[in-house]
Amino acid sequence: MATKKTKKKHSKKTQKSNGQNKLLGIIILILIVAFLVFIAYKIVKLIAVPTDTFIIENGSISSEESVTGYVIRDEKIVKGQNYKNGMSQIKTEGEKVAKGENIFRYYGKDEESIKQKITEINEQIQKAISGNTQKFPADISALDNQIQNKIDGINEENDIQKIKEYKRDIDTYITKKSKIAGDLSQAGTYINGLIQEKNKYDEELQKNSEYVVAPMSGVVSYRIDNLEEVLTPIKFESINKKFLDDLNLKTGQIVSSSLEMGKIINNYECYIATVMNSKEAKEAEEGDKIKLRLATQDVVTATIAYKTIQENDVILVFKITECVEKMIDYRKVSFDVIWWEYEGLKVPKSAIIYDNSLSYIVRNRGGYLNKILIKTLKEGENYCIVDNYSAKELQELGYSTAEINNIRKITIYDEIVLNPDLSKVE
Image (cartoon, helix red, strand yellow):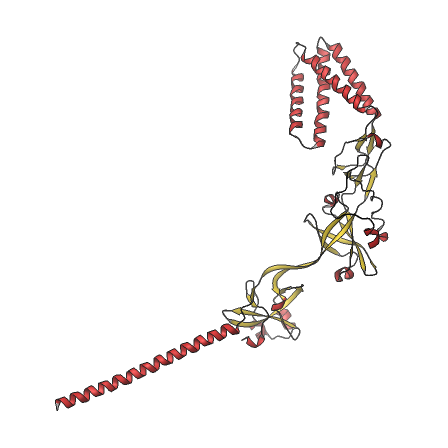
């Protein structure tokens, strides 16, 4: 009997264990199925969510055109009678001068011979002073130091104008030194005679020279291309495409320097004439302000001073008041016309959805897609500058206060979807 009871108990335990194992198996099976469904969902979600995205950042867009133009300046050529004699620059290229200042001078007759005689006399004076054993006052020692300093300055200087100034100073110091030595030394009569002879040659040099002065204030230039009286601010009406092409100029070529004449340029303003046929050029008006990027990479503000349309060509003349002196070396230049430029949140046009005259982007956060209303500030060729609507603007669009409070907003570094499919947006 005991054996039968034991068997029955064992049978019940076995049945109970089998039932638990089946339940556990079902639970495990359910968990596996749930896991597989979750994985499948994620895979579908991954496939459904586009991977082609863009991170929003602050940026800028602009409308630009690269063109060539012709520099027009208010400039006056200055030329004397003795231009065949050769010239010596008193004011260097690009130096500012006032009206009436000496700019350069033409060499006089036998100038080289006279200069050589002055040099020889200076050497004789120096030899006479150094050969005298008499002690001189401190003034001469000071002048010797000044002469030596100027000589050292010449050896270290690259600026031609400053070298000329140093040489003039040396001549002045030598003359002063000679006069002091001549008055005090035993050889004074000889030295004074040399000084008088030198002064005579100096006067002859001055007398034979022809000095040319500035007819107006401005900047000195010796770059002459014979277009100074052709491309002028008073002749915009004569400009057309054929006229400019017939000048046969090379872009970026530096105008050659003249050895016979110079000119004074108004350094406060200049003009650039160009031929365009873009939509922006046709819509532009005189007085409009735009930006120009010069070949030097300087970006300057320009005003449209003149506009005319001839057949399909738009003739524009831009006036600039910045970097004028950087344009002196050139007559034909390349530059970029920047019609407009906007800065802000930069978004690709391919990410924008248009629906009932409103614009949206689709933001991706952790695989969840949300459609967000945006305001397009400026549209470029491939990108737009966008922003969020203000509460007042949303009210004007017909949104209620509750709707406005729940509207999502775009922010910098948001990840947005390119070419979005609204059917997949939650």
